[in-house]
Every structure is written in C-alpha cells, then in structure tokens.
Length: 185
Image 1: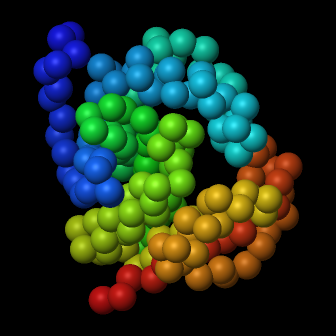
Image 2 (image 1 turned 90 degrees about the vertical axis):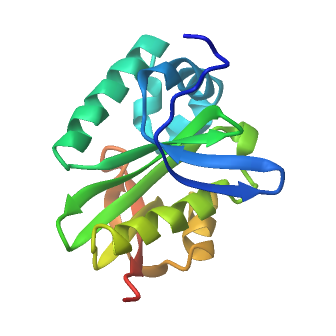
Image 3 (image 1 turned 180 degrees about the vertical axis):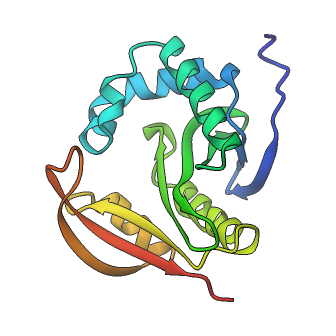
C-alpha cells in the first residue's frame, strides 16, 4: 500500500497542541507501525500488558487486528487505533461490554506520544460514545496499583475510585484499582 494514501474510518477526532488525533477502526495496514511501537516499548508495556511479550512480528499484530475485527462484528468489544498526525501509535478499547449496562476501557500508547493528554482525551471521547451511543450506565477503568500514569489518566478523566481488588491484573498477580465513570444522563 502506498504510505501516502490512508483509508481510515475515523469515529472521533480532536487536536492537542499541534497534533491531529484520530480514533479509527483498526485495519491491517496499521500492523507494521503498531508492531514497531510495541517492539520499541515492549518492556514498559509488558509490565502492565502481558500480551506485549507475545507480539513477535507485524504479522502477529495483523492477526490480532483481524481477530478484533471479528469480535467487533459480534459486538463483544469496540477497538480503535489511535493515530497521531496519521501515524498509528496506540489503541483504545471498550471491552467486557454488557448491553445497556457497562464496559471497561483499556489502552496503550507509544512512549513517543505519552504525557501530552492524548490518552486522557481519548478515554473521555470513548466514554462520550459509550454513554450516548451505547447507552451504558457506567464505564470502568482497571489500573494496576503501581501504575501511576494510568491512575492519573483515570483521575484526569473524572473517574472515581471504587475500590482495590487483589489478584486482578497481569495473570492475577497484581492488585488493581477499579475506577468508574457513571453516565451523567
């Protein structure tokens, strides 16, 4: 595919400083850039997201994209690729969906773009979608107790701490904080 031609299905877009952020449906052409970001940040991602160690090639990422496309058709989850100025650099999802009830948000972003508010704004936009389009009553964000960056995202996105549960994250070896945002309508 010509790198200058991009076919996105952009659901959400917003600017942050000089960056154009798009949350788009995942497509296999994104696999190379996403895999490179994962490979570059494997140790920091793997600390919280064990799947990062299993991603060995862009072919693995393309296979994952095809799997999530099928899950989205079955309405099990919604996954969006985070593009920064057209570059695939992370993903955000709404999973564990229960129709008209709840969902959970998960995400990752390349270290190249962390610290700019991209994840916080993306979480807020996904919540708006979850509440207005999916009619969810609440959205949870589960954060490892030691993951200060994700805790700041939850707090900056106005999630409220509901409690801490042992053996919640990373193959049930880490305690997790459960943050919740309730539909304001």
